[in-house]
Image 1 (cartoon, rainbow, N blue to C red):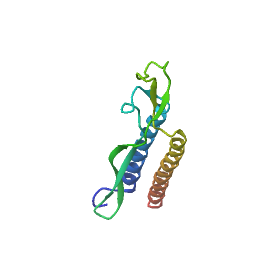
Image 2: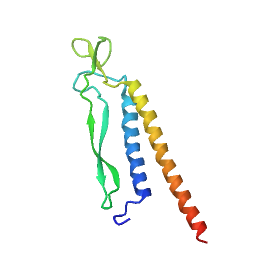
Image 3: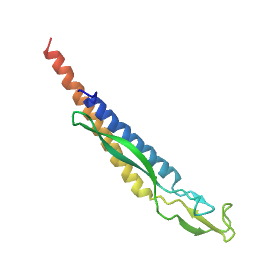
Image 4: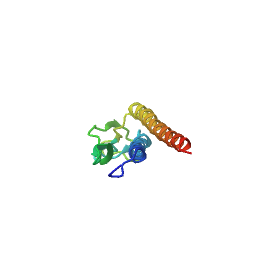
Length: 134
Protein backbone atom coordinates (compact mmCIF):
# COMPACT_ATOMS: atom_id res chain seq x y z
CA UNK A 1 0.00 0.00 0.00
CA UNK A 2 1.14 3.51 -0.71
CA UNK A 3 1.40 4.68 2.89
CA UNK A 4 2.59 1.40 4.42
CA UNK A 5 -0.62 0.35 6.17
CA UNK A 6 -0.87 -3.30 5.22
CA UNK A 7 -3.31 -5.74 6.76
CA UNK A 8 -0.49 -6.67 9.14
CA UNK A 9 -0.01 -3.04 10.21
CA UNK A 10 -3.70 -2.48 10.74
CA UNK A 11 -4.24 -5.69 12.67
CA UNK A 12 -1.06 -5.15 14.69
CA UNK A 13 -2.20 -1.69 15.72
CA UNK A 14 -5.61 -3.07 16.67
CA UNK A 15 -3.91 -5.73 18.80
CA UNK A 16 -1.78 -3.04 20.47
CA UNK A 17 -4.97 -1.10 21.26
CA UNK A 18 -6.51 -4.21 22.82
CA UNK A 19 -3.36 -4.66 24.91
CA UNK A 20 -3.77 -1.11 26.25
CA UNK A 21 -7.41 -1.85 27.06
CA UNK A 22 -6.35 -5.06 28.81
CA UNK A 23 -3.68 -3.27 30.87
CA UNK A 24 -6.08 -0.56 32.05
CA UNK A 25 -8.76 -3.13 32.87
CA UNK A 26 -6.23 -5.26 34.77
CA UNK A 27 -5.11 -2.18 36.70
CA UNK A 28 -8.73 -1.42 37.54
CA UNK A 29 -9.32 -4.97 38.77
CA UNK A 30 -6.10 -4.97 40.78
CA UNK A 31 -7.25 -1.81 42.57
CA UNK A 32 -10.87 -2.88 43.11
CA UNK A 33 -11.60 -3.01 46.81
CA UNK A 34 -8.60 -0.90 47.80
CA UNK A 35 -9.24 1.84 50.31
CA UNK A 36 -7.87 5.30 50.90
CA UNK A 37 -7.98 7.83 53.70
CA UNK A 38 -9.65 10.49 51.55
CA UNK A 39 -12.05 10.69 48.64
CA UNK A 40 -9.49 12.59 46.55
CA UNK A 41 -6.86 9.86 46.92
CA UNK A 42 -9.22 6.93 46.25
CA UNK A 43 -8.56 4.97 43.07
CA UNK A 44 -10.92 5.53 40.15
CA UNK A 45 -11.28 3.25 37.15
CA UNK A 46 -9.40 4.18 33.98
CA UNK A 47 -10.57 3.82 30.39
CA UNK A 48 -8.52 4.38 27.24
CA UNK A 49 -9.98 6.66 24.57
CA UNK A 50 -9.08 5.82 21.00
CA UNK A 51 -9.34 7.75 17.78
CA UNK A 52 -9.54 6.53 14.22
CA UNK A 53 -6.52 7.21 12.05
CA UNK A 54 -7.11 7.16 8.30
CA UNK A 55 -4.37 6.09 5.90
CA UNK A 56 -3.73 7.78 2.57
CA UNK A 57 -5.39 4.93 0.70
CA UNK A 58 -8.54 5.08 2.87
CA UNK A 59 -7.71 2.33 5.35
CA UNK A 60 -8.51 2.99 8.98
CA UNK A 61 -6.61 2.04 12.09
CA UNK A 62 -6.67 3.12 15.72
CA UNK A 63 -4.49 5.19 18.01
CA UNK A 64 -4.68 5.91 21.75
CA UNK A 65 -5.71 9.51 22.28
CA UNK A 66 -5.73 9.52 26.08
CA UNK A 67 -6.64 7.53 29.17
CA UNK A 68 -9.55 8.98 31.10
CA UNK A 69 -10.25 8.50 34.77
CA UNK A 70 -13.79 7.68 35.82
CA UNK A 71 -15.83 10.38 37.49
CA UNK A 72 -17.55 7.77 39.68
CA UNK A 73 -17.60 8.61 43.36
CA UNK A 74 -15.67 6.29 45.66
CA UNK A 75 -17.76 4.53 48.30
CA UNK A 76 -17.40 6.01 51.78
CA UNK A 77 -17.35 3.40 54.52
CA UNK A 78 -17.10 3.88 58.26
CA UNK A 79 -14.23 1.76 59.58
CA UNK A 80 -12.63 3.53 62.56
CA UNK A 81 -10.19 0.66 63.16
CA UNK A 82 -8.66 0.88 59.68
CA UNK A 83 -5.17 2.45 59.69
CA UNK A 84 -6.10 4.77 56.80
CA UNK A 85 -9.32 6.03 58.42
CA UNK A 86 -9.69 9.80 58.69
CA UNK A 87 -10.54 11.63 61.95
CA UNK A 88 -14.22 10.65 61.53
CA UNK A 89 -13.32 6.96 61.05
CA UNK A 90 -14.14 6.89 57.32
CA UNK A 91 -12.29 5.24 54.46
CA UNK A 92 -13.10 5.44 50.74
CA UNK A 93 -13.25 2.32 48.61
CA UNK A 94 -12.03 2.42 45.00
CA UNK A 95 -14.64 3.38 42.40
CA UNK A 96 -14.31 0.20 40.33
CA UNK A 97 -17.08 -2.11 39.15
CA UNK A 98 -15.40 -5.53 39.20
CA UNK A 99 -18.18 -7.21 37.23
CA UNK A 100 -18.01 -4.63 34.44
CA UNK A 101 -14.22 -4.99 34.33
CA UNK A 102 -14.49 -8.78 33.95
CA UNK A 103 -16.97 -8.35 31.09
CA UNK A 104 -14.57 -5.82 29.54
CA UNK A 105 -11.72 -8.34 29.79
CA UNK A 106 -13.81 -10.99 28.01
CA UNK A 107 -14.58 -8.55 25.20
CA UNK A 108 -10.92 -7.52 24.93
CA UNK A 109 -9.87 -11.17 24.74
CA UNK A 110 -12.35 -11.87 21.94
CA UNK A 111 -11.33 -8.83 19.94
CA UNK A 112 -7.64 -9.69 20.33
CA UNK A 113 -8.37 -13.24 19.16
CA UNK A 114 -10.27 -11.86 16.14
CA UNK A 115 -7.16 -9.92 15.13
CA UNK A 116 -4.97 -13.01 15.60
CA UNK A 117 -7.35 -14.83 13.24
CA UNK A 118 -7.13 -11.99 10.68
CA UNK A 119 -3.33 -12.27 10.72
CA UNK A 120 -3.45 -16.06 10.41
CA UNK A 121 -5.86 -15.82 7.47
CA UNK A 122 -3.74 -13.18 5.71
CA UNK A 123 -0.61 -15.26 6.24
CA UNK A 124 -2.35 -18.35 4.86
CA UNK A 125 -3.58 -16.47 1.79
CA UNK A 126 -0.13 -15.06 1.08
CA UNK A 127 1.48 -18.49 1.53
CA UNK A 128 -1.07 -20.08 -0.80
CA UNK A 129 -0.52 -17.36 -3.40
CA UNK A 130 3.23 -17.92 -3.26
CA UNK A 131 2.73 -21.67 -3.54
CA UNK A 132 0.56 -21.21 -6.62
CA UNK A 133 3.25 -19.04 -8.20
CA UNK A 134 5.85 -21.82 -8.04
